[in-house]
Length: 498
Image (cartoon, rainbow, N blue to C red; front, top):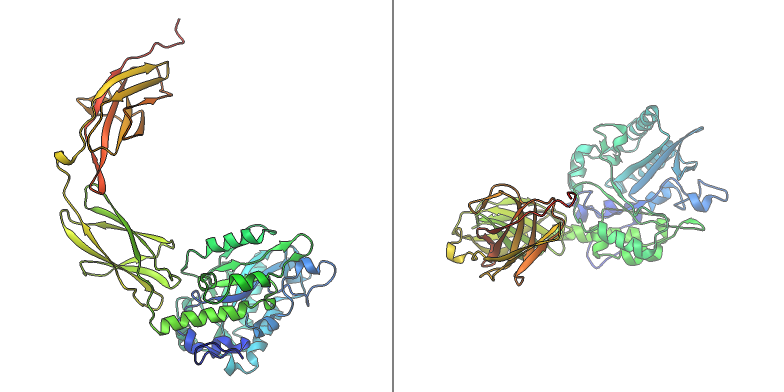
């Protein structure tokens, strides 16, 4: 019996979802932290011989895994000569789909009342050498085994994928099995494929595995189930026991486990992963039940672009944003607008506002339980197009120079209220009465302290027109530009001619 510092949080590993139903009630399945067995059907009791260390990823049966708190099976199958078996890297065990179904039914048959709220996810991942008939055969076995006359439980349909745990218990009583995999076709009984995030190599260092995990838990809220593979191999004995690493990396209340959904591991019972996942779900459930809101988003900056009343606002998401599913914003406390979570630490919002107006923007983070964060409040001021006295003065071109066959230079006098210069090369006749009528051949930005620039790799030997304009920021927003100053550079003789 496990106990935490909160009341009514006692549970046993075999019945933890039922024991804690009152706490995890507001959690959707894709919000939970769920312990999973990598290559669930490749256990040492179903493999033998010298290859055991290379092909076995678990120590004991499906029933053992369920009884010790596992709620997701990573399933990989192969069509062999004798039939369809669980497999790993081409090797097979003696486990079959019928054995999986029998163990799940046996688990629920023994005192169903104590397990009535458990949800088991069958995550179909690999199908080696399968035919269309093989897919049909496996699907038929699942349907018959989990909704037929001899089954203890029924299949939870895809329609429940957006429901909370409490809603599932109310709307689909007796439905305890999720089948996930698009390979069976579009059926109401099947949920979407569960994406696996794997480092992509068998023998990474722990430092590399660490960086991989940190990268993939940053998109903190995904709309569907997803799996993080925390596995590695050794060159001498195959799948490694990573209990020590897991016990440190996935400690309760750390972002690593809070932000994860399905955590897929080898030899699960050697670590504390199951207990840690349960503690994470208690934490998430209590936050939702206690209406603890996310933290306030943090304003970073607002960038204005022409015509001076289009604004891009950037803000930092809530620090505990594993719960944040979207953001809500208002302008002057008006109608609420929804902004979907962009799954990054910095979120961006585009606003189109009236010119020369003062606005109050408020942004709220909203969690899966509907709790609003305290608002980020920011004043935004739009303005009209800058007048001429606020624009930078046109720099005066003082000299031009042809440099060899393929280069040229231009020099100009110092401008005023300038942040940088933009220099261009135009073809002969591409500037008419001080305005470009065609796109430039070449262009570059030049430092505000530069008095000139040089272009290389001119496209041919013709005459050119060079232009420069000053660019500045109006206050701290936007960009103001001035007309071109330009000059003609004479052509250079074609060197191929005598």
